[in-house]
Length: 542
Image 1 (tube, rainbow, N blue to C red):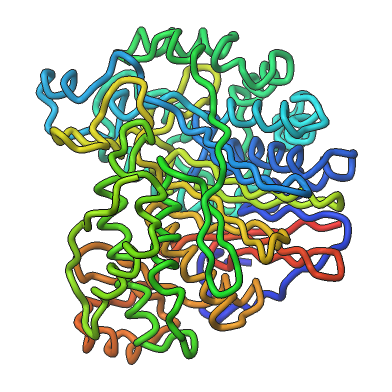
Image 2 (cartoon, one colour; image 1 turned 180 degrees about the vertical axis):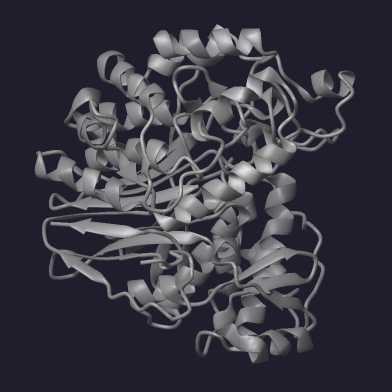
């Protein structure tokens, strides 16, 4: 039959998924299955999350990879733990270095944007603290599925959303990557026949299988003090990079206490800065005393958009590596300050500036097991495949997270050596009266806190079930008064926002509105899970 796997003219209704013993929800079906394999082999939710994250790093390279960063919130059955595995900039790199070299901005392509990859160090920390299986055991289900076989067949079928994003990235990299030999490895590895794989085509990589084999033998710290580190440093030295051995050896993720906002009887948890999760908490703090009527009501959307605008105006000005912030998370979440910001929301769209607080392309997955352990995990290259640099022979695509730094003099997020940038990826978690409800998240750059706000409102203000809360049409504030709406709001909804002063437009590309997963624990035991219709999401349950 001849058909287009990307043509979906009808609304697709998904039902929530229920399970009793365990659940893994990811944006790629095979990754969810791999996580469930680990649960069935006796691993816990952290083991399953790390195995699924490693799988996503090679199966969905359009959004994350072996050179990514990651963050996680873990409920161990009694309390929450937060992990910040975002990498720092090389010690030899700074804004002055780039300005003296004639740069006017930080290019998203090449070594200027490369920070130390934090994901593998994050996998190491998670498994050391909470895991029960070795790296080799965690990677074995992925290696078995991903291997091409002696006849060259095998590998894992590419889902439609990944295929579309792969084609989009190939077009962009073909157009924008500098004419430099260092970038040829990206094309050799991810487009070996000069094209992106189509939906249903098998994807496998002997280079990445080699990396997985090394990780199984040396452990997840190999990229920092093992043979993978040697290869990365050799590539950096040969192609004009800034990384030095100490940048890798000294790097450690940070265990942090998650921050929260109480919203109408529930507590919403995020990782503290340098992440942007505080943006969602600030917006929720502004709206916690508001009453809302129904999803899609223009006045409800207006207040949410204005709250997000106010929150972003602060976080993009003040949030960076915590050691360089003039205002703490507590300052930004101060109730009186947020009440003052709420008073600025009027009946028409505004153009807010940063306030003065008091002093004081990503993959997301969820996992849960019967012991009460639950994991909210997110991992990203930042922009698609990242910097366009791939370590030769290993298939490690390096992220371009450093593009989020600024060269602006005096800005707290100015590029300096050994500094973590303002970060977009954010895992979320819900509790109520001290009881863990479960993990949730929405991928998609600066859409993420906007997605968190809307999903939380869908659950709490509008009483939607987890699947409906993810399926509901979304808006995304872009900049100024410009807002994109999914077609589900209709032209009338768009026109209503225009009458409120917003530059609103309907956007048919669902890729602009994030992709999420959620697992919540039922009061009587067991789990209810949901995954996005906007991606190839899948829930593996037991």
